[in-house]
Image: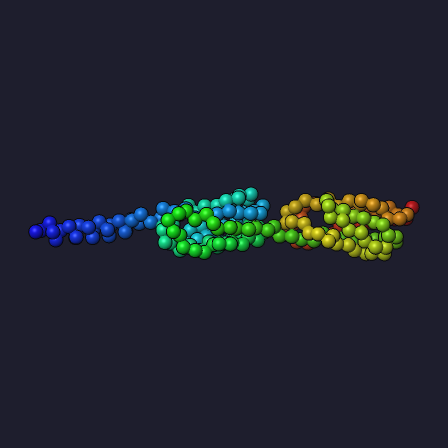
Length: 192
């Protein structure tokens, strides 16, 4: 008779001790895919759990496991330097399977490239930076390329075509973009 009353008490004690240890929850991985991460400094969070993601990474996984039926809310805790990242499918409730449907999309900050022109009196000047080209008209005193350059990217501006009857040269045409627009290129044109 004593064992009849003792069994439920022992079972309850075991259940409480298992619950205090986690009792089987916390066995699922939380992670996903990353696109476009070319910068350092990205930190993702899920509640108090964080993960630092390396530049160039295409996947991530939190070290802390989550339990079945646990809710999750993956957010960008810290943006990478020179880029912005957004989270898609970051909120939900885990079932009995690892969660790998979170998507983090990153874009490097973009800036313009341009400068001043002196002495341009005719048409035909074509300046290029990679595949991006601009053709300032006669008497222009400044220019800006139509495309943008990513933060930290190298640029090399050259004269693809000289203007009619003139010769132009470029100062400050080679460099690496910082976290701001570049407007210190100097194009000087002369008439022989």
